[in-house]
Length: 90
Picture 1 (tube, rainbow, N blue to C red):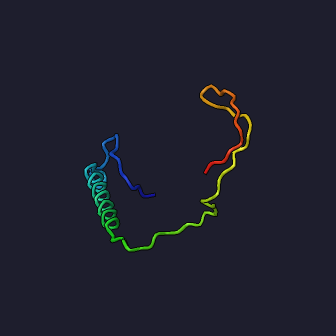
Picture 2 (picture 1 turned 60 degrees about the vertical axis):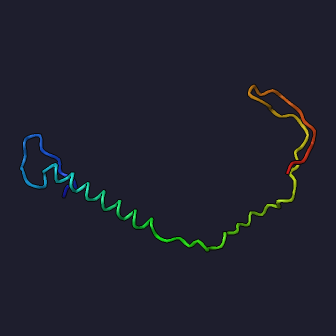
Picture 3 (picture 1 turned 120 degrees about the vertical axis):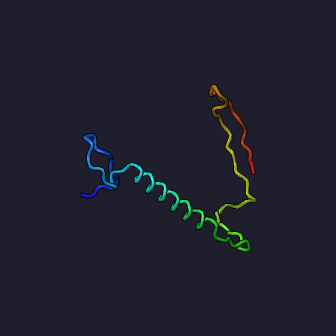
């Protein structure tokens, strides 16, 4: 099985280029630089400024009122019981 990253041996293993820690650092820097360049080139693509505004149909009538029923509810930090009459809000 091949290793992607080689680490120096604690026994003082071979001194090939592959086990050189500077080689791993250079490879990581080159990969990071390549990824940064790809991200910058892709993010600088032109945008269509004359595109129409998207319309979303939510199924809600903006002119209708919500009806709040009369009754008791918990109010405030200490869960005090309060009561209210029925009303509508927009």
